[in-house]
Length: 214
Image 1: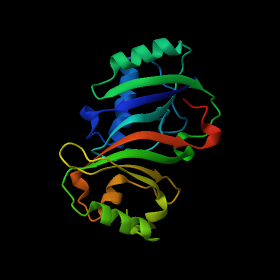
Image 2: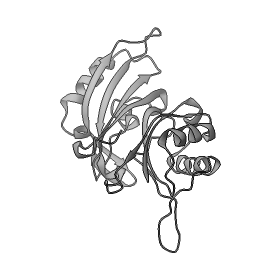
Image 3: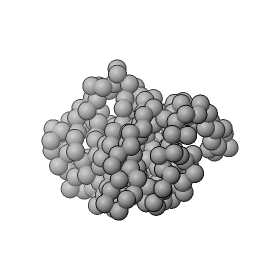
């Protein structure tokens, strides 16, 4: 059986990276007594598939995990068992059976939506954002490769500042084969220290053919 799990990654897991999150889920299934299916070959690996890596330091309410199990337990019991075994910082919101033949999650992600709070006061924030949105090219470097961030910024909505006067935006960033839009790179393109933001993912948008997911 193939399960699709929608879960929150909260403050307690904010500094857990992508690979460690994968290992955390593997341990959670083991503690819950749920037998994971494994890949074939010389080095079998548990069949766990996270939709999209969440940058270190960010939180989320919409992470998606596919897991293949060697069992036919009712999904309600599986969800209860997993939540009881999960560490602080992981909260399961939905769990459903999906077709075994659906494509891998990573190939189905089109974009992600975030709320970003800028923790320093930026008096000319509106001007910086206008200048960024008016340009056609924002060349960035990641892992030694150049890419244009600008077409990955699909939507920016300026939200009311919070009680401390900190600027806030809702932003939708695309995922492409060659590059993925990231909130920290968006902040850097504004001339803002990426370590002075808080980003929270609110939605992962899958391709239309995969929207039966959850």
